[in-house]
Image (tube, rainbow, N blue to C red; front, top):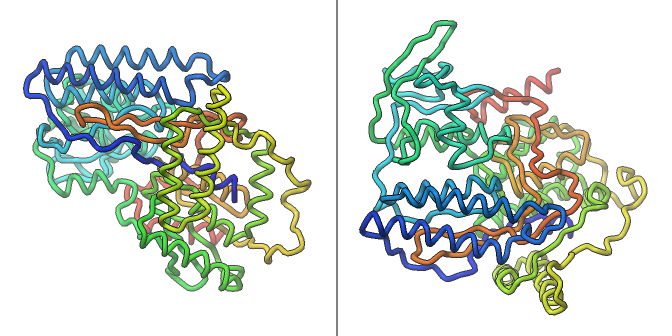
Length: 492
């Protein structure tokens, strides 16, 4: 499973946590924002896989432009909210979900968020997802606010500080944050909006008030209101539901994954006779693709998956930027997973550490992991002696809008087989820069995220996302709703 393990995007800290020392004055917050953006830029420049990428000669200029934009915002910072916005502005300009800065403040320096009594959702347009009585009506289309279209509002108030508007799934995953007042000094909070329902329009002034626990639940669970825990269930006979809400599993979730693999392999006859298998990726933010790869191997057969994956990526090469800090990152991964008895991942990390050390010693900027990869076998879709009976029953993969990184790696593998359909939203996308590590910045207010490897000739291109085979535009993305979608498609 070498290729599948190599797709992982493990996030780990390569520096000890630094105690938070929040500034006490406007000048202090301005200085902190400037200091941290400069530090994040310097660390990124020293370690990011893209800086020396010959396929992307404009990378360094783009990174510098992001720094300059962040510093221009930092010059206007007077408090914690401005600090956060400047950090987000710098990160948004990088346009890569695997790079930039993340603030770490515990919230004591930030005023409570406010909302206007409703939460929005993107379902091809902007709608009221959930609302308190009198604030709005569920299902209303949000036509405009303060004379600005819904799309313009998203670009100015959301995407200027987070996300990537060129990726369709990002509209789905970030729309719930449009009507959240985080006291960003660089954003104009809407005062009134025009709503439409059943052809009738009404304009309402927005009454901004402190967020409630219900508001946060509506916002955070917009695309996963009843996320299932990791595991395999059978909601009705002959229909299997595999929930994969995380590829950063806890020890208990790791044990569940391993138990599922064994169950699928030992009860194969039941799966071969199934009406369908549903793979539920709601709430999955990526992590380590070994978990989805092992499930695919159990379901379709490990050699089948490997042959098809190798054929798909026959021309793909993986380059690791060889720097002392990046090497230390892989040593930490090897030690961490060796202690967890996950020998495959530990060995994978140790091999890359060794290769990067050799490249650095030889004065080479990159270690090329699979430079001498063997050619794919002919006719990779054909069965071979020793393959288990072919699994050809329908597979439905629920894809949320925020699916990226190892979540997309999972979709890559599942879509190797023609009996797989994607249902839900368009996904997000990855750049060709992956395998992130994080580094705490001075003062402990933020950390920098650095991708250390780059893909060359990856079949899924830079910024390419998946469209759903069956779009699910229902406002409430419940398990029952998706079960209905599956049953309707099976009935056809």
